[in-house]
Image (cartoon, rainbow, N blue to C red):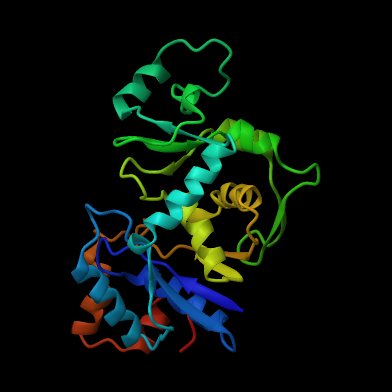
Length: 277
């Protein structure tokens, strides 16, 4: 088994991160645990947060092979994937701003059953590579049209465990033409980078929070489109505060570094999130 923990260095790690990282470490016992830094948000990611991530995880007793994969080092890899999808008629550049999209979505759209989705304004640009200021979107209908007749599946071993099936109609109605690359050319959006990187690292089991369970259908589609292997998925419960609110990086009161400074031990942190010492 090979698992990974893939944080974004946009703030200090908190108890929710500790739970996910330690769970991935525990489940990889006898296998391999990898660390991946998802630093594709150039405006929010900071070197001090990345350094703090390494420090916190090592303090928790985790270790991993070096060097660590960093998304910012893989721009050419993602761009090559994007060009391949464009060449195959499965993606297209999009220059729409948020204001453009909101205006299009608020206008009457004859025959559109899901007016909350991107209306396909730039779909006529299929066959063209992105220029400065362009994002890139998946042509969802085209991607689904090319799937094999046999239903795509994936195995879930966490919450809602069992064999799950991809639902094409749901992807069209609930997600539409998702963004694969941000307007900074070569900066992959999460859905693309996570699929490409998990395959590159040979991840067999993806351990992550329940908030990402819905995205798994998108990832299974991209795996099929890109001819990549499908790992098992284990979506775990979220760590919440006393009011039931999900922890966020802005909630520094739950930061691992703060607990450390107050004298907590790694065993204390594991107990706080419901893991055995």
